Amino acid sequence: MNLDHWLLVFILLSSFVTGLIIFFLKEEAHRLRTLLNLFGALLKVILVGVMIAGVQSNHVYESRLELLPGLDLVLRADAMSALFATLSSVLWLVTTLYAVGYLEGEPHRSRFFGFFSICVSATTGVALAGNLITFLIFYELLTLSTYPLVVHRGTEQSLRAGRTYLIYTLSGGALLLLATVWLHTLAGPLEFSLGGALAQVATQHRSELIAIFALLITGLGVKAALFPLHGWLPQAMVAPAPVSALLHAVAVVKAGAFGIVRVVYDLYGVHTAQDLGVLAPLAGVAAFTIIYGSVRALFQDDLKRRLAFSTVSQVSYIALGTALFGYLSTIGGLTHLVHQGIMKITLFFCAGIFAHTLGVHKVSEMTGLGLRMPWSMTAFTIAALGMIGVPPFAGFISKWYIGLGAVSSDSYWAVVVLAASSALNAAYFLPILHAAWFKQRQDPWPADHAHGAGEGHWMLLAPPLATAALVVAVGVLANAPFSPLDWVRYITEIEYGK
Image (cartoon, rainbow, N blue to C red; front, side, top):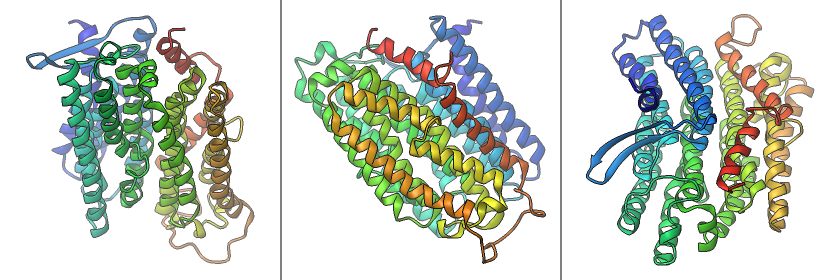
């Protein structure tokens, strides 16, 4: 057996096969379902680790299947795909543990975890896609596999949110398909490659490539929640907390942001994109989205909606860093792809604990929460400070590099955007922390499902504590070998030919 050919297929199947098996399990097969979930998640992490070691040693992993004459389904491992695949596999492992605890005793768990596993397979496929058509196939599979998770509760509100989600994401997918077909007619089958693949045709088809870029970014911008394509995201917060966590930190939103990175760097090429003049408009949209999302978050009393608008803002840091055209800003944007995921999944884990254990859904209900649930609130606090950009947490590192990149490219307006956004982040997070830690609660909790006065089930508490520790570690140890920052430097040196 040729491991170089099959490793990427095994990475996909590690979650896909377990998901298919879980679909057929009876609801009462709780232990077997949990074992299958954790086995698939652990196996994926191990296989991705093997892939990373190979990529670091310049080993070539590729799988290719002919779909039509001249049109191949391609899986390929490179430094960029390894970054996103690692984020997805590691965070999916902790999300799986959290979801098992969160959904204990609820109906339709086999259906939930079946789609849950297929969703991670689609996300991994997005990460490993070697060309645009492969990316499109897995990108749409991600839409179809997350819809049942959004509507899992089956309430009128969740069904309405699911319809909105489908309208937005399928419309974005249609634009992405149109752009893919158009690009194929101009330049033939294009694969993601270092420096991009369109430099040779840019002079002959300049106007067409600008229009195609706009279609691609619009299609990807739906999932990346760029303004004004973000409307589905706050509504999708009616889904269970594990779904909210994966939408914001692991799968859907990150797939859109990762797609934008792929288009700029490995399809067009950052130098070609700059020559075409398409990066400046992207930077402008990202900057507006950063401020808009922060302002909207400021006025949300529902905790998950506040976090949702925070995501609208924070994910656009990735697009901004990508669009500023500079070595340092690229490092900041790509690092934020990882750091934002770690921070945001911690916040949603904690929001789920507050709702599940105490019935706390609103910011106005969080008074005294730090005294009642100190460990959960500590994890929330660390992630919130990271989001603001307080050193030495994860968010500070990525924001610092984006700021340095903005200065080095004379884009001082972007520094103003970063400063304003951080101030707004502080404005919508610090009052929560102050009320939770320093105010005395007078009213009873809306509900209390915990046994005794504890923090709730250990399977709910362990994941946010682990990811909060990562928020600290990737900041304090940012310059350590194989840290996210170190790996992103490696990617950026390749992209810029340094």
